[in-house]
Length: 158
Image 1 (cartoon, rainbow, N blue to C red):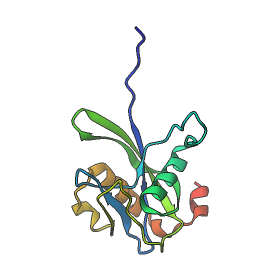
Image 2: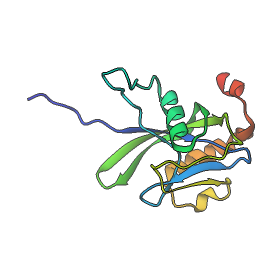
Image 3: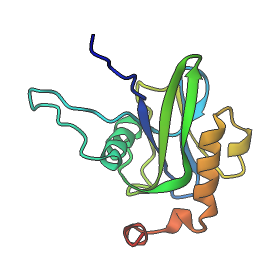
Image 4: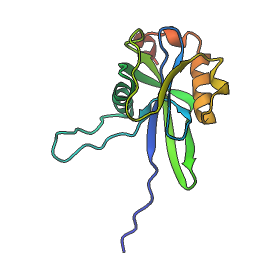
């Protein structure tokens, strides 16, 4: 019998701020707010669906699919890597990036994957129904100072 080790599902998430410095969140089927993002795609053998080339490109694709926003993902947020148990017995490794929104004035749109979309100020986030790991990542991103006004060049220098 061949041993197959259990694998951790990994989900890449992004803290993305609109033009008014509000974080974009999505309400899921558990009535929790969460950051946009999802899993890396491995692609299809037929070459039609290509695999994601990196966690950052997967996140950029996911945010575009879920909200219509174009973003540049990075850097990785300190305290943004954590383990979440959405339901008993199921654990997911969450990897969170700060994002530069390339279309901050474009209103986000909700996809079929979520129940609701909202934008929230830093002061509103602590009172939301969402896992503490997301709250910590958002607080760290806001705590960077000028997070909403940083440019791509600022991140590329990191």
